[in-house]
Amino acid sequence: MAFFRAVSFNETSPTLAGEGVLLRAPQMTDYAEWASLRERSRDFLTPWEPVWPSDDLSRAAFRRRVKRYVEDQRNDQSYAFLIFRADTNSLVGGLTIANIRRGVAQAGSVGYWIGQPFVRCGYMTAAVRTVLPFSFSTLRLHRLEAACIPTNTPSIRLLEKCGFVREGYAREYLCINGAWQDHLLYARLRDSAPQPAGH
Image (cartoon, rainbow, N blue to C red; front, side, top):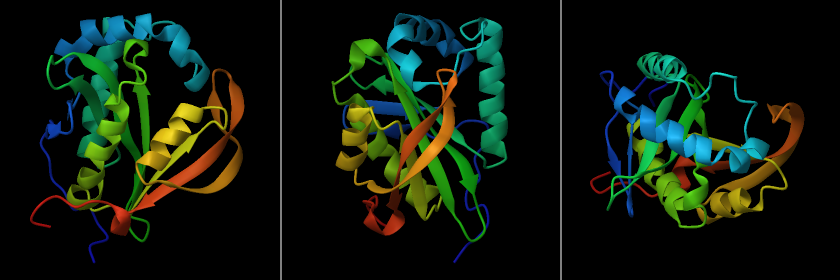
């Protein structure tokens, strides 16, 4: 069993193709579309995210974000993806596999956001399902975790639909929208995940 980094990428992640979606690493050329979608979705996203810095949607902040994504991936700490509609190549949201722990844990956490115009269209469910084989086969994780605020019913349904199992309740787990919020804890194990052909 490998307990150390099992993958080696350059500065770009692979493009992952799923049912109606494509996932790939953020690039500077995505800035305008990303900033526009985030701004249009600000009121919708605010209850579920940390407080945005005042310059969050600036080009400079996006450049820092992309640089951090590249460094985190190079260090096998996290892997960030933007989610696009496969038919139109339009940006719909983002997903990150973060907090990767190697050694005896071989675990990571998945987090995601969807632009308000694309809510309840199935894109995030497709994206999470698409990233499962990448997480378990390519990254060789044993466990993928997720946390959501108890009132976020759509996220709870999404995780359960994707095979995540509720494991606990963490008090004041993350600072969301300026306040420490309780979270439900979910996880999916490698043995319960679909494997790509040939594995």
